[in-house]
Image (tube, rainbow, N blue to C red):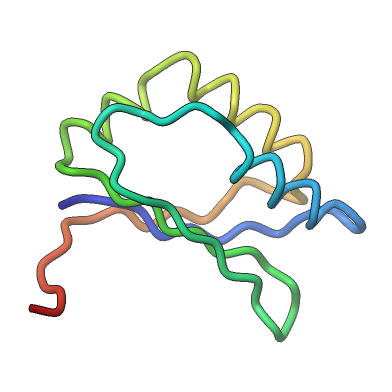
Length: 94
């Protein structure tokens, strides 16, 4: 498996809209296993986790123009670009 953990800072008053927009999309990229969001108690930052079957499907999604269009919608609701941490899942519960 391969994926990304990312941190975003929504603009004031835009956190719920961002959450709804991200998780409400009917688009399901090929190879995507799941996605989660966590709202940080301390400052309201939004953390996300997106998991894919493999790096190839993750990269294909990242390069897809439809994903780029979605990102521009999300980006308009953010204070700055997200902080991305991509990598291979090396261990999970049995």
